[in-house]
Length: 357
Image 1 (cartoon, rainbow, N blue to C red):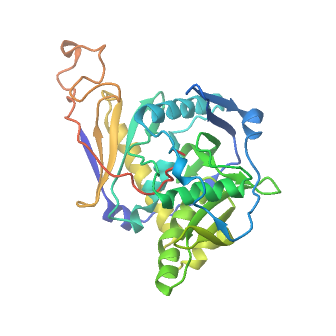
Image 2 (image 1 turned 90 degrees about the vertical axis):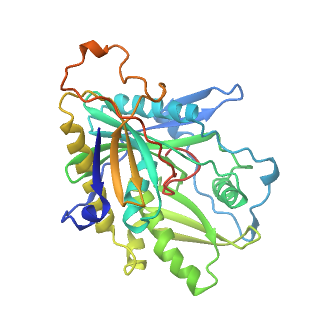
């Protein structure tokens, strides 16, 4: 079975929406041990791992350590492990929400009105009264430009070297146009007041064209990522082509839309997210018999369509029935059969390569 949403129609829908983000309802930290096992810490133990922002002096060479850098494991097994922690967090903090997700998935959806050529996909599966959105097609940043981001983060948090095997995630309740979401998101550090800070790096803005692209594209991504979980401050390191950090600038998340008023609007972003959440809820309700538990939600830029289609569980190959416990003879004649699974590509480009948050 399939359901489709026209992106053009979704953008034209008259939908007044605002993001309403609760304060942190919980948190966890994940750390990969030398044995390869991932240790999970909760609450105060997790918060103890969250570092304070300590801005380095400039200039600073961000290339140091690149030759020995090993990227974070973002294999399917690793992502499934992260999702298991996400679901545990939702249960632990009593979040009775429609949708359980990492922020990465919302980044992809939110930027679609202004990045219509970027494909993305995510898994969707029922879990009780909620649906869980699964991370798909995350590319691990192994190039030198990605490393510059890791190196700046290490320098700005007092780490002696890049460490991609430890992360802190905040958990919040997000309300959008009547839809409730439990969202987990990786947080870089906190300021002296204990408020969250997002760390970013980008090339120096040496031409008017670079300034324009920064306002039009970078600030949009910065705003989406921070606004979704109420991060009030973004610290951006500006580097030259050789990877030397030359300048550091602080931005208030609330101020970013004013810098790019002619290019993008928060109202368009949040209204589009609301339209997609409406579509997802209506499509799942349309499956009255709840015959299907696993779906794929994907955006096809060529057709400007978002499609929700049935899919096998991640642990089962295409063509295997969604529930092994139910035999074909037990299925009512009116129950639709599973479609072949379509493959979707594209990471969506809206999230960080550091991990699923």
